Amino acid sequence: MTTLTKNITGVLEKFLIVLMATMVVDVTWQIVTRFILSKPSSFTEELAGFLLMWIGLLGGSYAYHKRAHLGIDILTSRLNGKYRMFSELLIASLVFTFAFFVLLVGGIRLVGITFTLRQISPSLKISMGYVYLSLPLSGCLMMYYAAAFFVDSLTGKSSVSLQNHKDS
Image (cartoon, rainbow, N blue to C red):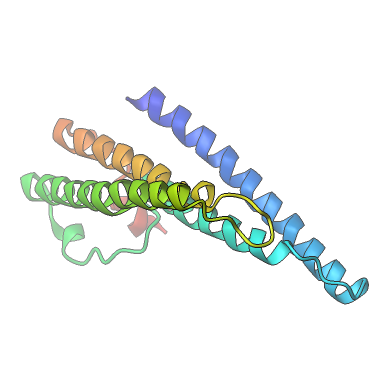
């Protein structure tokens, strides 16, 4: 599972870099057309919003894998042994359940409805279903990472524990 996780995370990192670079170029172009050319571009604001959505959701999955999400670990940092393992299993289970029902199931429903209704974005003229695909995709990634954390906790290989947060 470790090699697969590294490969998935590597692809995710590269994809996030491309999305961020595209957003920087897009917003720069928006500034140039608005303030230098005095003729604002019609699509840049919409594209920036869509890119922000994809970066936010996929970046959340990436942050979850790196355990970089904001968390309150007052209680869990004091646990050890089977209590710590139980809390890690519970947290991974809750994240998996949330990602499944809200991001995956809800996202698939939203994408399906959007494609069925043929909702098109005003400026870019693309199907909003493609924009909303970031929901089920990030749900799948979070579920995968939660399952990996669950297995790591069960086997005692909790690779990135809360200790990393104490070192920073």
